[in-house]
Length: 346
Image (tube, rainbow, N blue to C red; front, side):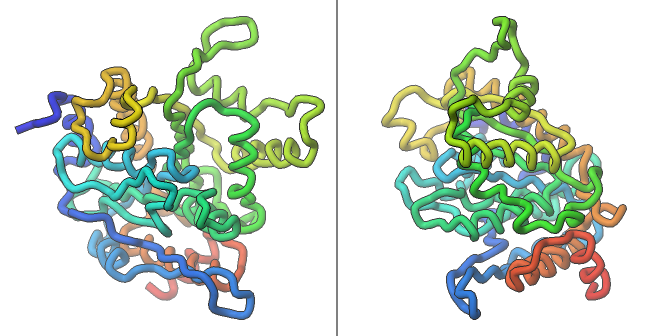
């Protein structure tokens, strides 16, 4: 019995996964704790239960989709939708409308043996802790972001509203990639993730300077190539310019898509995780289903390659251990050398 009133939502999920995922609850993949060590910094650790889940996938190639973005932008709500959990009325990721950041570290959904794409790849979804929360810390946030960018097949950057200087300034705090990723450490362009930038609660009609219509992809490219306005705060506009350069350099493949607000009523917005799929606005549902198809196509074409071969559940688990060791050693991440170490230990 479909209680969502929209078979399309369910079908899109089946298209992405084949069968509903047996993993009933998200598993924490990476835990972050404060302190320890001389620098007092942050300690990262992989969680064994999630690692065992990855290893159980064996040698089958995996495509890894990470959802990143500022805290309280609805990332976990998006994941519940992408995984068809909202459509099926299944258990949800905790989503919070209070200021407390709900997702700490990195959590994994998917990775059940049956969550395979159409080509026999397993699809693993990662939910990365939102950055910029009151409890967060810039160093911790940027290290998590760097790790997620290195291991993803597709990075979904989930932000609210239009692409403007304020947003690029916020991103510049966590995309200081040069600090945490070795300049030769990101792999070849084929090994880097595709970027799908998802603009939530988006109202603007996208127009060029002459008033002509723009596609979402064109809107993204213009925003990434925009020059700061004169008279802007120079250090902030320098930071916003730098993050644009980083994003253009790091992601050879970039796509953008927009979603309207899921419901209009303010009170219902606070209760999104209690709503049924058919309670969401039709324009939101059709936009979401288009975005889901776009993401499915990207994931199907991109099992994560490292060192010229597709990553499997087993090798992804080994690679994560090495990258987390590098984060704890305050080293800059280098996917090639982490991969070599993982090969020797496998």
